[in-house]
Image (cartoon, rainbow, N blue to C red; front, side, top):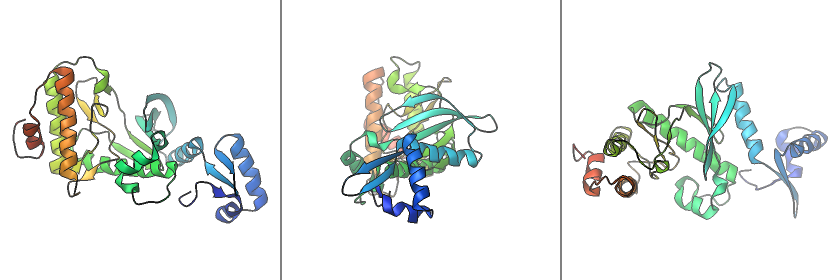
Length: 271
């Protein structure tokens, strides 16, 4: 599917290395369970459905000894679904399935640099790239103590990470000590920038989790850039502007953008 929206029917026996008769049998069963989609046009072709891609990722993670059971949904967003799950050691974790087909293709290509140069790319493959990018970011950030979910495993479009508890900042009408919460967000942006060399590049009130203990968790990192990226400074300023503007509007916490940005970049010791 890297080269075809729908893989031609006649190519599948060669790619799967089984006879056409077996291919026809398996495809009919997969279509019955809605794990593949059949398309008829100038040729007949097949594509994995979202459920089919989920099944492949889950199967791989179970076989690798990463997952044993799924629980309730933790959140459904425009570009991802997150579920509660258990490891074979009964550890509670979060599993995030990237779903990039929920936003327009043009918008996705514009904001995600890792697909901008590709002429054809399926939604599923876009989701896989987003998953790989987010897991990479978490592996860079977590060892430096940045408040992000612990990266555990990744397969296809799925990321397994430490449990996410709490709610997005946007969900709260009021919070205790909003100034302290903003300070913690900026402190973690500073640590990400100075120690991990990472800029979130898509920060807003929708991807800051306020946990039950009052501390924050920064989520949704597939658009991250390194500090060596030519647009890193511009993206960092946008992140800081978004979050300080939100705290000013929602919680009446006034912080000068210039001072907050200088603090995050290490040019000021106090915000």
